[in-house]
Length: 184
Image (cartoon, rainbow, N blue to C red):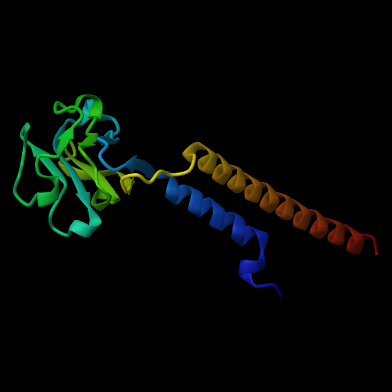
């Protein structure tokens, strides 16, 4: 009997999980010295006005990147490296836009950022998205990002097609085997 990990069903399920989990995360490349906008939009904001917007980074522990409450920035517990370097794209947070502007990025700004909002109607925090910011050092540039992304998507589609074919072939073989037994 084949092990679970050798079956096409396992690998197809694994691929689906990887695609689903990574769909919630965005990757943003930047060059040192640039101003970068990290996008974040609360869903269905018309019915749920935002009371507090918070941007954090996992490696900062209790400190945060930005906290906006009562139409003003809250400097308490803000990590010192972000003071006077961050802003919201829209301080009124119209249409749920709580996108973060990070000015003059450095390689130290690289990391996983988390955006969340406290909504008035539900009186609860809602995690909106995670963004991985990758900042290149001065003078260093990445290869063509579009080509890399295109090749990655093509590879994923190719793997999905191969897995689908294997599943189909396996199903057909079992079907033919059952038909041959029925004839004998």
